[in-house]
Image (cartoon, rainbow, N blue to C red; front, side, top):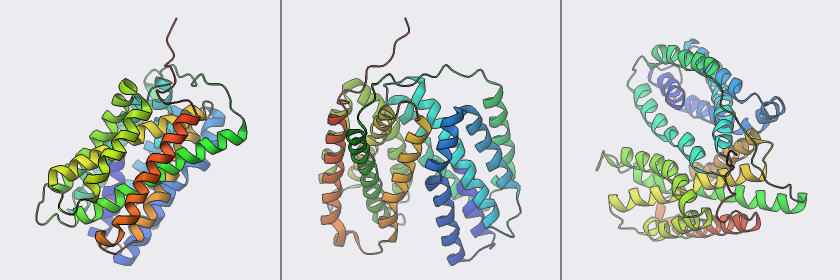
Length: 338
């Protein structure tokens, strides 16, 4: 899914269907739809509890977007953005409800996205015919999702909290996600600009982000959500702030900050046990909101090192107090079959 959308966007640029300014506008429109649209679409998905059908519709829409001619690029980009949003809402809700109280399924679901974006970008820039081959693959995935027997999904068994306290908990958790997104994007920019000196650095950073999300949930379920996520953030701080960090230290830092994502996502879902799609959509919107300031900033890393150090501490503090107030230090107890 993410590879197809990235290939579509960068394929439009490579095929000269849009200039640099037009491409920037397309990127902005796509992100607003793929991330910002999720909380709104989630309301309908949760009300109907149509999680599998949302994922199927997302695959189908994105397949259609790949087949739309690029002469009017905003049309395929808009369709792909809406399709991506629907797929992630449906798939993310299923992951959150496969094992209520566990962060591992959510981490495993979101982990491949970074690799997909990286591979799709390379394919699109090189003019690979991914647009025609990707559509049939997404169509096959849609059919498989539709005909495969649906797993039994159950809401996380947690008592409802007073609205005021629940609102505070959600604000803390969502703020931590936005701060983590800001940190990851801001610190990856200066590292990826050094790709000429070390062409393997960028794919290693992408792989570290994917592994951090994938293993972060597993580690958190094993050692505790609060201990794993907050300790990982604090351990990443000296690595992120080092002006002389080696490539290995940069990769390790990216792994550490990525481990917090499945914990925060599962914690938001635990606070909204009846609305998994809305929980996933909130985190997606927070990722977008956190990335915007870092993307807009064009100055050198040295000029923003202090504020970003504060962002790491704010992220760790928000996550710490959010998990403590929600009594999720070790995560909710997973439901067991009788």
